Image (cartoon, rainbow, N blue to C red):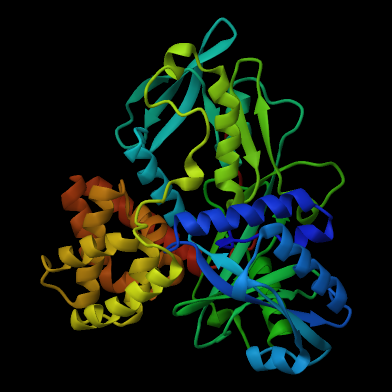
Length: 498
């Protein structure tokens, strides 16, 4: 993921009006539900002679985009001259620059968004099982009735019965369809996306910039606090699904693209401080390249009753879920529908996510400004205020209060307070959970890991009652993650043996 909640401007080029309208609408809804996590950011699209987008096509495309997505106020698009474009972003190449488009999109953290969704769901009665892997299914005749799961932490197995079983397994959807013996017809086409992370001081772009790569693909350079990340690639993937890595060719491709867009900065491999690589579960279409594949989601229903959903974009996650709810609810029996808590229509467009106690994004900014003096008084750098609020929202208060219990240097005390919060409020069960999925430190603040690692691992050992073997395994796993985030392979890792 490029960690953007965006409307998919490029889909206008393929006249995919419905997708643009829906994602534009969803973009606004998700921002309202989590303004601390889904942040409005200005985006600059330089217009280059011979590039993907000409001036008038861009003017028309952004105008249609505004109309379809219901964009209002300062977020509406502006067309810029060459001079104004360079004033906004002096790092851009003047060569062939004709002007620019300036509009608004939203930046997020997909892992944090997922965690807050799960926490919000549990408040409404959902039961969340972390580290529970589907082993196989049970049937009554030909109809699926339950799933057998394995607890990866204990090795124990258990079964979960349900009226309806839905698989939203992302890249693993087809593996579950195969277990159900229903993998036929349409299937997934996995593509890999890689992002490179630079210190912001090395690549000091002012705004998110959406630019043409040398091969015509569109690439983002996105400033995020102390770093700037560049991505993404889009290549067909057949490697190991559980350990997706960046190759030297991936890094060289993105470096070429960044040098092409920002020629005054001599970016080298040694300037990259971390990377991440992941998979997109797209729907296969014969004869189409990865970049040409549709980002629409699709629902597959097997003869056994297994419902699978795949494809789609991060921006459309809520709408995808709504489609499943709208499909399943009419099939529920009358006893369930007669419950006083039963709602016939999907309610999620009006349910704020965990951590959102803000009226709007201005309130988020005001809270961060007030918090800066407080974090400074604790010995932390002022930017930690934005880091905390954009990760946790108003839950920041709980973490800062917990800091008082630790007599450590400020950064270590903060990490220990986050560890406590992660274990007791966010189902953290591993070092990977903490450093990757809850705090994003591996990608956005990798230098901090060396400073806080010892204290965090000791606290995890205490909270989770790890034995020596578990501590050793967790340290090895963290070493592997750091290695993968800071190195580049000659080729993809081989797929796991079935």
